[in-house]
Length: 101
Image 1 (cartoon, rainbow, N blue to C red):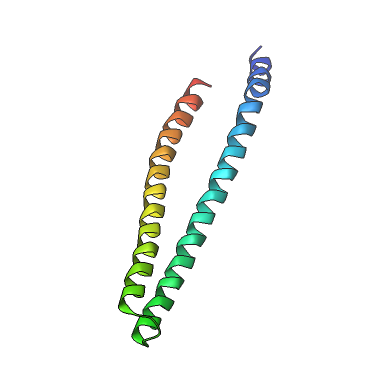
Image 2 (cartoon, rainbow, N blue to C red):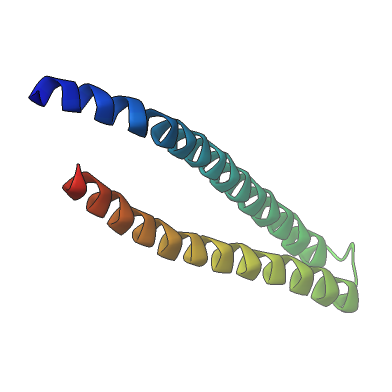
């Protein structure tokens, strides 16, 4: 009877595990995209600093572009912080599910 229950549990939980795997893959792809965007912005900021130092742009242009880049980096950090909170909540839910099984 014990082995039969394990098989039933596996069959019943299989769709949930598959869905969880899909969501984790989407989450990982989104995190990678954010990391790539942050790296690109950092590179653009370096270029911007070179441009102001060499006099290729004005102080006003520099300030406007720098503000835009820094604001986007702040947004990315906020998104990452929220996701960390969500991941912690998901880990707690996963642990509760494992304890039930």
